[in-house]
Image (cartoon, rainbow, N blue to C red; front, side, top):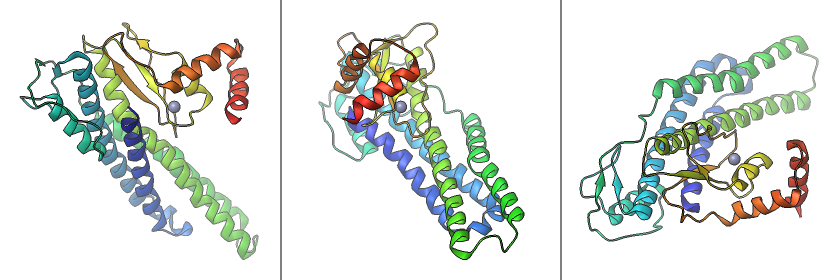
Amino acid sequence: MAVYQLAQEALAGEFAARWAEALAAVEAREVAGSLSELEAAYAAAVRESAAASYALSVAFYRLVRALETGRVIGGPGYRPGASLGSLWSDFNTLTGTRTGSGPRTPLPVDVRNPFPAADLEREAKRAAEAFRHQVGDRVERHERERAGRGSSALDDAELIAWEKEFLESLKTGGSGAGGMLVQDAGRDAIHSALQDDPGAIGYYRKTDASPCYFCALMAGRGAIYKSKRTAAFGAHPYCHCQAVPIFSRRYQLPAANDRFSRMWRDFGGGSLADWRTYYSKTTKT
Ligand SMILES: [Zn+2]
């Protein structure tokens, strides 16, 4: 369901816009003095968009599960008397599009809640780490360089370009890392729910329109059936891949996943670096 993947991507985009807005409010020379305000804005934006990502993933999981098994699962957002109609309308509300609808007949319920509660403490810690790496460390380096250059080392145009590049790096680095955290809230909810839901058999990776070589490789592997130790999902900054749960062997992979499998077969084997080269050559044409 492309709508789900795009809606998650949009949440990362909303986060990036908020971060850009917070940065735009300060001059390059004021950044070091505004770090704690910037960090608070960063953390709040991650928290809010991550909560939206989590809620969207739960609604998506519940809907896909009901469509495939005819049963509703409990957990956050569950309402008694849930039907395909109500699950579609929950999903439509969260994605802001009218993707589907269904009958209002209440479905049988599995009361179990497989969704882990959002781990806000861990999330806040990850956001603080991301901020330190992508913003704090960069600012420190930049201030050191500025002090080292002295005041007359650069003419105006060079100085302006240098400061602009600095701000740009804070924007790009911060939004890549934060966007990953935002989407991880939803990805983790689905990945964990699978393990704890006897009705789920696994998941596949739904990529965005132009995934990197690594994600294409993962998507090309097809369905990942769950086992006692299903490996972590494995996303990265600027990755908009999502885990789509499957509940029966009758699932249908997206056309892109089949295309990546064929590409992998045609590649014929080799190192990850070889695959990377092959993939970028093949997808460029
Ligand atoms: Zn990806």
